[in-house]
Length: 315
Ligand code: PEP
Ligand code: MG
Image (cartoon, rainbow, N blue to C red; front, side, top):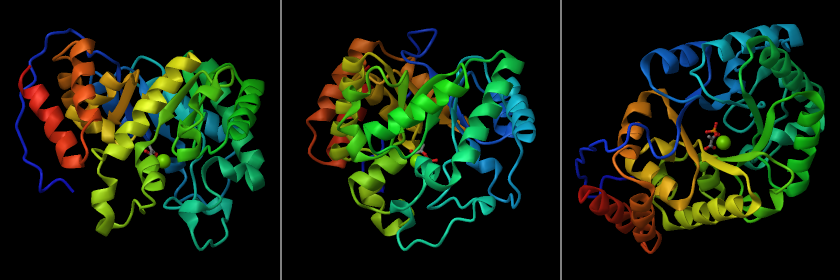
């Protein structure tokens, strides 16, 4: 990664009471939800990774069991919307009760929403359980599906979710194909959320688990930043909101760039909420756009990062 980059310590001095875009928390467990509430000023949850509940489960949880567990997590989560992702098993996250067959290229295999092929019942049970938990807790729940590659898949998920509950419905943007089609999601989704971890993996054809390819996974790569700009433009054109919930948003300087590109919210690990809130409270949206415009013309990750840090150091 970043070792070759000049690192500058920037102190962010708040000029706003609130960050220029909402900072939500990423959670996977009840403990995460409780920590996000007690230890941070996060506004809601931007990514609840439900599969993390099931990495050791050999038996399929019933609707009752799921509804009870989801309700306790929704009740403990910080105030604001709670974005729940349907199961994202496969690739690096096997879930025992799904008995997923061996694949030669699991990152390119039947993972995420593609599991609807063989596990429609489980995805439906999740959505039903979330509806029970939503009604019980009175919380604002948004549901989204991972690993969507086509508009047809987005529509399939949206139709299914809207038939089963009263939540807002969206998809994750993790594949280059759907990133190219964002405006075509108008009228289908209420929101999208960009998973930059997988989006980088698939844009750069670089396995996110392979430490030898860390330079390509760097979120300051111009190819990722230009793609994020196009996604933000597509969402604005389509008239729905766009968040970023991948690890890139946990970098305080990068979160400013995201806001400047037109991203409407970020969701970050619990430990990074304070730092990201600080950078996003230190400037106004016009200044964030200036920073983003400088970053957008950079031709290397080093130059992109330096452009952002230079602009932020002059605040
Ligand atoms: C992502 O891909 O950026 C993401 C948020 O999902 P996960 O890291 O769980 O694959
Ligand atoms: Mg992902």
